[in-house]
Each structure stands twice: as structure tokens, then as C-alpha cells.
Image 1 (cartoon, rainbow, N blue to C red):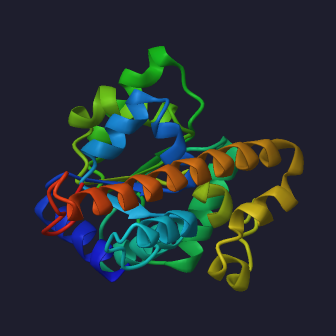
Image 2: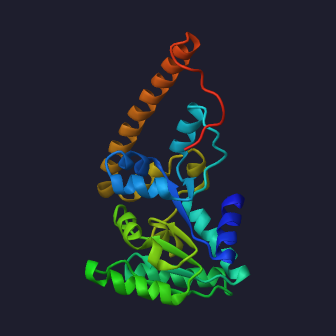
Image 3: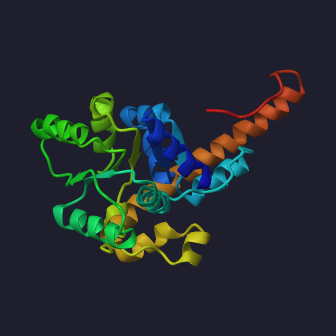
Length: 250
């Protein structure tokens, strides 16, 4: 968390663009079927792990993952940093009511926070150029996008270079949590990586199939990776494949 906030603040001071993406199990699985989403993740400067399932899977494969950095927690920390250092955020996404509530609650938490602007996510394709002009004219230091996948990724793929914002981050449904529209899972539930189960509890009709499908696919992907890794190590030891050396990247 500390490292991510420092990189974001440095980007805002230098006004050099840095894009952050939060990676959870659902997004990881959907990347397999959505090339636009996969390209967005691959082209991002920071890929933060927002999901204990990804942390556990990476560690099982021997990848050097330090910790989970939940997107909503990072957003909260960055807004506090904006209040302290005078950076001006821009909120894009959600419904007008949810957006207004998120902005209001953010100001209450950080009275010194000044917004460069905000706009709900219910605009048409024909209005995109106007939205981009508004964001650019605002001279925002950071842009937080609360639009669903893959709409957010397509918006950024089309307009990333025109926005003129140093730090860009997709925040999913974090505006709902900021404004109190959706309750966050209790800390103990978060610790055990069961936030998805809490979401199903809150919205069973909408969420149960999504999590059942993505979790099952993720488990299958992980099992295949573990089997391939074991076979690769065994083959390498027999001289059929070169041994794996050096640091893990990508």
C-alpha cells in the first residue's frame, strides 16, 4: 500500500502518466476471453492484487507477492494524500446519486480535499468526446473511474492519451462503498478472503452465478498451472527443459 501511494503521488507531482489496475479473480478469468481487458491490464504501469484468491494462487506458484492491496482501500488512502498535498481528483462513473454521495462522504473525511470535477457514468458513445474534454480541461491530478468492465477498458483504450491526467485508476464499485450505498465485508471476512461470499449474501440474485462461474474457472486455471509447473521442473531436472533461473516477471 505504502509503495503504491508513493508511486501515485510521485506521478502526480511530475505530471507523468501512471495507470493502475486492480486484479482480482473475476478480472483474471475474464482476461482469458476479453482481449481489450487483457491489453488494458498488460499495458498498465501498476498491477495491484485486489483479491486474496490471486495472492494465494501466486504464492502457490512461487511468485513473489508481498500483499494484497484492495482497490477501495487504495482509493481511500489516495484521497487522503490528495487532501494533504493539494492534489485534485476527478471521479467518473456510477449513477448521479451514488456519485454525489461518494463525493460528499470523501469531502467529509478529508475537509481539505478539492475535486477537479466529477461526472456520472451514464453518457453515450457520442458524448465521450465531451467527457474527455471536460476531464482534460479540469487539469485533474488523478482520475478514478467507477465504470464496469469492459466499458472502462474500452474508454481508456480510446482516450487514455487525450485525458492529460497523471494518475489513472479504475475503482469498480468503490464509489458505492465510499458513499455507504454498499457495505464492506467485516475485517475478519476480508482477512480470510471471503468478501465474495459476503457480496453474494448482500446481492444473491445478481452475484451468486458470477462468483460460482469465475471461481470454478480460476480453480481450473490454477490446477493446470500447478501441474505444468511440476512437469516443467521434473523435465528440467532430466535435461529435457532448461532449469528456471532468475526472478519472475510479467
